[in-house]
Amino acid sequence: DAKTTQPNSMESNEEEPVHLPCNHSTISGTDYIHWYRQLPSQGPEYVIHGLTSNVNNRMASLAIAEDRKSSTLILHRATLRDAAVYYCILRKRLSNFGNEKLTFGTGTRLTIIP
Amino acid sequence: NAGVTQTPKFHILKIGQSMTLQCTQDMNHNYMYWYRQDPGMGLKLIYYSVGAGITDKGEVPNGYNVSRSTTEDFPLRLELAAPSQTSVYFCASTTGTGVETQYFGPGTRLLVL
Image 1 (tube, each protein chain N blue to C red):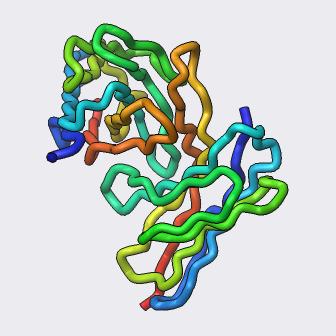
Image 2 (image 1 turned 120 degrees about the vertical axis):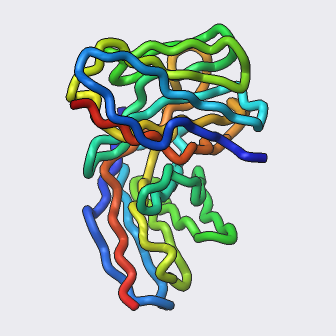
């Protein structure tokens, strides 16, 4: 199974952009790159996903390398509420039903400095 | 929509006891999942279901059982609880079509003593 590698922790100043890297050198051609985050004492929540092209939504941007072996989650202006563990996940297919499985690593713990 | 709800929020269980963690979703999602998260670790898949009456094992199914009699509910049963089952349990659901996202519940913190 393709795996992802993320830094254990990062710090950023409030109101500055944050770039969270993820390496996935064994990604397959049909793997989507998903990002979830987990705020303290809460369940994970979806942030963004992409396949080949860069993606933007109201929460963040996702920049995907041309060879798809790495990606970067970009928070354009970090706030204290963005302090969380961020997971970079490759969507995998489960069994014969065709549904997708999310495999969570340990993620990157983002600390926002006021 | 309430989304995915889980009960209880917290429970202390004695070794050897059994209990059921409840999970309900009101989004008419076909796919539902149970994960556990140990301290400082990522989530691991216990069981999943692709629809009423259909369930399958994930990475760490030992010591657990599930059933799916309705679309909305996906209870997780712990039989003969062990200290190794001390964890936070998350239920999630998704439509199962296209590039869907998973919606997670708030979690149940379980302590087995």
